[in-house]
Image (cartoon, rainbow, N blue to C red; front, side):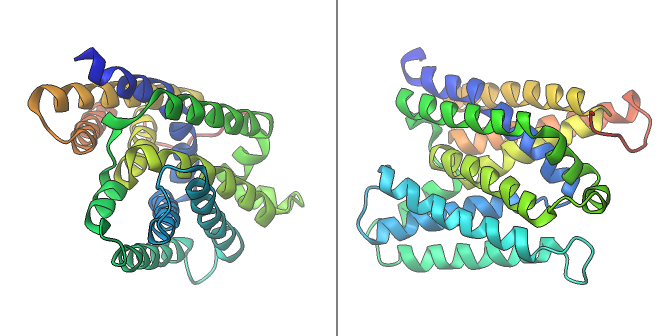
Length: 277
């Protein structure tokens, strides 16, 4: 068993932390489907490369995928209106639908289109390699340090956008930096686990943390802990029950969310929380 599961388990241990942190920002901003839209844009880049007969795992395919994701980052940063008549979630939803439809069209030109669509959605974490894990982990460390050094600005932007605008902060530029780094993380992770697991890892642990705690740091710790439990447990269940690994992990996370909802009814009083200084 360990020969098959070693590197998938290592991936589930090393990689989710940054995703939980970004997920807390996403939920607070009220743009829940930004991750799945960005993941779909990254997948659209992969589909474009496949149509051009490129290797889906090649460095060139990664850069093409990242380019599509950065276009989405610019779109969401400079056209999103938090207080306008058109909510940003509508723009995100439209981008997702168009990207998904375009992916299907591009893959219709490929003899392996059906299989590639399946890989985009659920991925195959069992095939992850040591090189992919540590390359992605190094990238995540770099993005994590970037957010750590600029954490006050990013937290202000997510938790107190009106205050950020009133302070003279160039909100759209900082939004673009957030979406660009977010897209870099999503592009790297979606090639390993697929769109559905990207959405699950970003949103479900963050929501569990929000349901069961009030302070940002506590929510982050709870989310990271649950992401480890959910990922490793899902892998073990998929191995022993001979189930698709991605689908099993998503279902385990669904169960953890239900459990967190039940616990939240007894643990904490209702009320808004504030980000750390």
